[in-house]
Image (tube, rainbow, N blue to C red; front, side):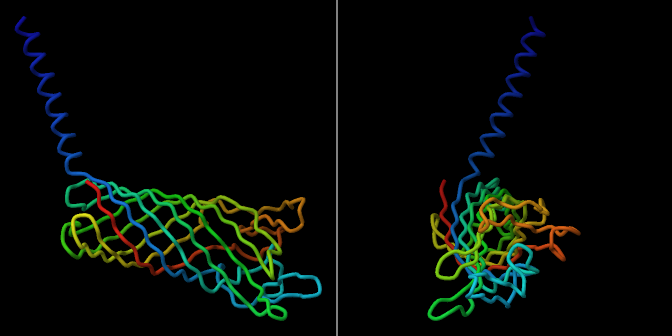
Length: 251
């Protein structure tokens, strides 16, 4: 009887400790939503500055090659929109879990024929998981933070003149993004931030894509070079971004 009573008391204490532990964790945690919009600058093979239109055949050439096998993607400017759901693991927000959804476009616009320009658009829709670290916490009026995300990216795009000409088949790739934010907190519910990030959309999962689509205007996205697919090197999509955003805090 005494042993059963001791065992019961031990289980009760363990249960109370577990309950107290989780109570402390969840009472010190809360959610945030962040939203930002900004400028994107294409890098690596995403960037280029030579695109011409053959008006007789309505064909776009990038450095003398069609989009299927071009050495770069002829983009020179862009913009992005990102939203984050954040979960604070500590009361002061030193460590946060992140879920992100985002859209990025890099593009280039060049002289076409008459009043119409020719160009290219490369678009990425992304979903990511990651972590944010705030060395000072987020209770002060100003605090810096750094973050990193692992992302699933859906990449597509098109060349255009008056309307779309060739269309990149939407393809999934894995990549990452990392950045630095400077945060300004106005009150318990609202804040503002500006930041810089670097994103690499296709380091993982690149394909040689040596097949063709039945529609001649739909192009498989070849981003891994091979001796037989026409690429002289890999086509990497990367960009840095500057942005402004808002933080919304929820208890």
